[in-house]
Amino acid sequence: MRKIAKVAASETPAEGRYRRLFGERRKGESWAALAARAGVSPGTLAWWRHELRRRDETRARSAVAVPA
Image 1 (cartoon, rainbow, N blue to C red):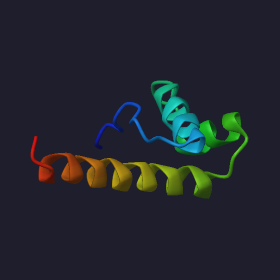
Image 2 (cartoon, one colour; image 1 turned 90 degrees about the horizontal axis):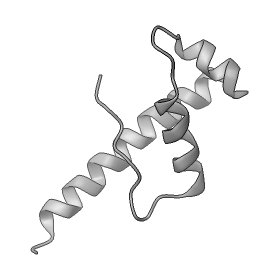
Image 3 (cartoon, rainbow, N blue to C red; image 1 turned 120 degrees about the horizontal axis):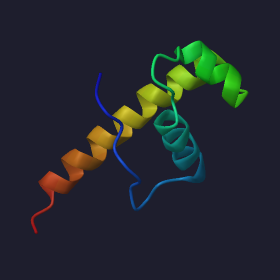
Image 4 (cartoon, rainbow, N blue to C red; image 1 turned 90 degrees about the vertical axis):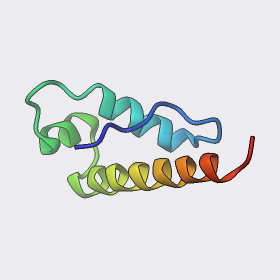
């Protein structure tokens, strides 16, 4: 699985919360257990995993497309 990138300059508070939460995932901990510990539904957690990857890829493409 891909790593979720560190904090971006234009990051929203929700993005930051979920990035930190994913970073705190314990070795061997299931996604369902992480969701329960954080007090969110597993579906919400899955959506944020997907969304953060999508946003990271979009930002990476934007950074490459803009001439320095």
